[in-house]
Length: 214
Image (cartoon, rainbow, N blue to C red; front, side, top):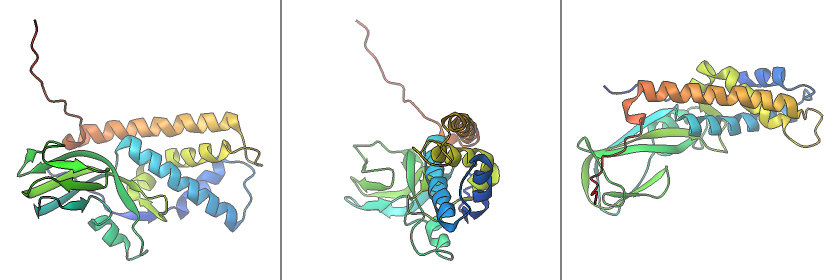
């Protein structure tokens, strides 16, 4: 079964009032909204990286020996986002597996993952598929729609917790920060369970190794 890939990106603007509900004494200024946006992006990066929620696949008919390819930055999700913004919005977060002709490739033998975004192939291969998860870039203005549609409360708690733990601000509140942090990570765990239950390729596979017992 081919997993559904949600390639939509959306603005953080609808999330800002939700964060304000959780963070008391934030000033009602454009500067404060920009600050909230920056922490929503940071919370979204953490959420995506730890939950592997936003699944993505990139396919190549052929790759050459020594060729380096991009997983997410040059993929369709960023190309579609260019209707609203010019700069890339997402990058690779986690690599689950890379296959050629449906066969799982071996890192160090078939390819070298320079990062979750950049993969260099060590031999020529056909019918290549890179499977993994994506996250927003720190410079993003848009975030994956799944976060807003399914985890808005948890993401708002994440941004709230990051804001409330700042030192010596009018809205600093270590006690509320811990409450919001707990709700944020509860959401991450729920999203992770959902992803590994619904997407077989997101599950960790540990190959069986032969052992000699003396």
